[in-house]
Image (tube, rainbow, N blue to C red; front, side, top):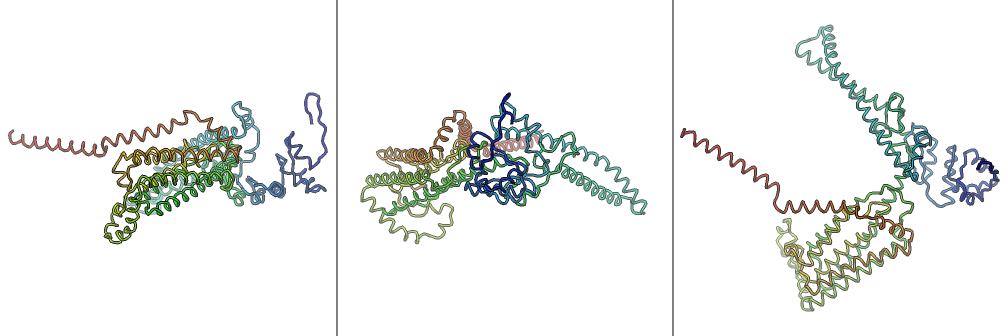
Length: 579
């Protein structure tokens, strides 16, 4: 091979055990014929053990494709992804852990040359994923132009068929005269019915021809590989192909860029599942300990409190599902198991912090209440079941039946409920790690706003700004000497668990910690603007509705207008006799 101006590289002897070292300085390529010779040599086992060092395999047979995947999976103990578009890829697709079938019928759609080479030479394209993004953008533009031209052609053919409708009616009437059938009013109606059926069939035939001509390229937007737009008759027909029968995934485009999409979405799904398991375990343990703490002292959460906290947490959990994968695939993989030390020790530490804060607040509340108040609560709870049994059954049919259930408000219950609700919010806030694998907290506006609403509810109930809300939730106003301690403890529970979680990530997963720091540095003030805009819209709508109901304004205006019309009619009727 020629190197520089006058430099000639001498060929090297093939040594399978040296492939890993050779890969550090060269990009390795092997063809199907060379691979066949290597696998038939005495060092076949060594070759199979080093196949993962090769970057490009060219002109392989179906059997060789399966061999490569089997060798990589066996020796590297890793997972393999395979994409293909034909019957010769079926075996490899079934052998791989993830199989992706591409649309067939586009030949060299994924091979360099022509427009692809020009695209790769652009100055603003930094890597392969940027090139794929540029290619998709170009494909979308061409697909739109293709669709527009196809729709114009279909509209032209439709107009041509409609212009021939009168001619077909006359031909149908002439045919009826020759057959001696009625050509009167009923005959003309029958002729029109026959012509409309013929027109419908002709339009359907044209639509079938258009679909057959453009296939899925027209339907799914794969116009880049659909040939020249000016030569629509030469557009290749696109079909799913044999590969789709052996692969669990099938993309509607023939581009290998779909592999990147699967990895991005898979990482987002993995991270979302791990985070939801963390949140579920922590919230379950916090709720269990809170109920046991109150039960020991003879109290319990009221029905209204359980409904309120359950509803708020459900809304936040539902907003969690709005997470979407980011547009770019990050080179660092997310943690894939809740038993990873970074996640496991983080959960244990968060649990200890939350439970410690709960014990501290419960102790403060009992000290403020005193032993006599606690004894009264215990006695009330003993009689509570009898009071419920003596309630009228009709009371439970009311939508606000939980307001009729006997409950004795107390400071211990109030403090424990406020602490539990805030801790459930902090669990979601701390364990939601979005970027660089899925949309971050600021981009998931439903989740951020629901968490903010929960925090605001806790603060409002602690200060007792709305007595009616405290009355509905069976909460007492926290005394001033205890209020500051409660809010400080809530802050410690939130920020303490946050710091502990990030510390465990930094210790046991430093690569993840570095990525999180990079994403935090990349956050700018502009990232807050969409969120602030949404909050502004919400507050503006609340203020607008708070000043009066627009529907009532409209009804009042209509009533006033009808009233004025009635007054004018009465005035006109009174003036008529006088005239």
